[in-house]
Length: 561
Image (tube, rainbow, N blue to C red; front, side):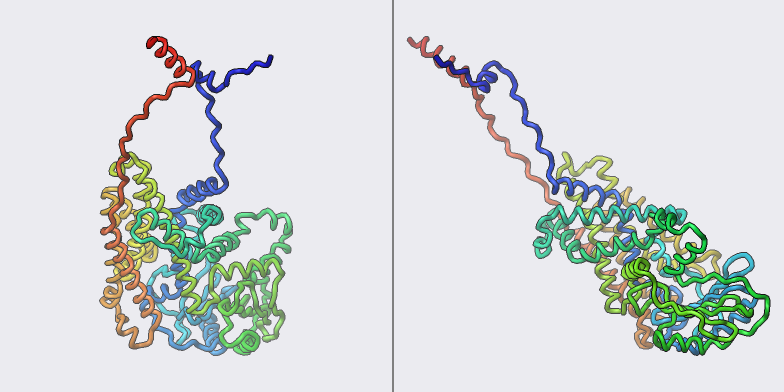
């Protein structure tokens, strides 16, 4: 006779034995990528925001440098290199006749001065020249837009190699955040066309998605090519293994740089041949405005060499192109027009990152899309705090870690705007005779930036956002007025004179002042939505086990009998 075993689950419940919990389901790929995206973005986000913003500004570093040196007159017409270069060479013969090497940079459409460096007895010397006279001029001691360019890939106050390594590490985090973000948001392209204004966390996510998709190819390109520009520092082992001899390393260097070390002089004096003919030969090959630099090795010696280097602003590559002439007789000795495939790939990536080849419309596109990348990083940082505030037991009294992240966000985003505006104010207000004036310009930026962090730590978060944004708006909006009071090149004068560098700079800072004012108003009006209190549900009646219920029913039936 067949017997049936009782139900194991029912028997276990009747005996009061706890059931085994089902194993937790492992997180899927999207959840894993979401966690990776969140934490890589947060841990490197503050440095990345500063790198992105200063890198964005660097697309106009030459124009910023012109504004920060108002004593140099505007250049309304570009000088002919074949006419200017011989005059600059004559000036260098009087200025540094004993130097074994001169490097002369010619003005271009974005730089209104000529410059030169030369080897002195103990170190390199430099000078700035007026293209109209080819004579040295005294300019305001200012680091100009070069500071933003240098900061965005090597930071400041750190040894150069440490700063570049840290910037490279953050760029790797950025690359991971971009790829993981694309994997996480399966509807990212659909969400690009959706923006829900005034919806708190949802609005921040929509803004973050839209800004991410808007420049996604650019963000990938600019991050990856930024790593490529310093690839020989980050990963030197391949070149070290392939090029062990000094001659091999010099040959590799010639594939990525137009700098040629001077050979040993012959000791026989010789007049330098006319440079104009050499420049004209180069112009016939590259165009009238295609000359970037003229370098002279061993001037005044029979072994002199003149190297005419092609400019980078007319081609999508920074690979070296140059012509080498015999300095004694002007004979063409070498023409370098191309490099190897690997070096050319590196040169194209370098050019794409720097954008030097771009005309003004394309440069503005670079600027705007890079600005969207800056906003992408900023909205991601803000969204981290907005999302987690709603989960706190008491959003009005967050824990220390949350407060620290929130205050760092305020100082990084609003505080950096205040600090950069203070940098420009310092350029106009610091005494011109101040020792190490350009150092103080940079120091002032970091002093003000540190002060904004201290201010954010002492003020309630919302009030700190509003007040620092208003301060940035005021400093930016009043900058043209300050320039008009401290120089003769006010905005109206610049417009009337056709000086579009000064005009463009001051109209841009006015626009950014208005943007910061708009953000301050939006933050003041924002009312965070609080979660409604959970409803108190009635407790469910206890459910007896099946066998226990059957026993109770049988007992009640027996008693009724």
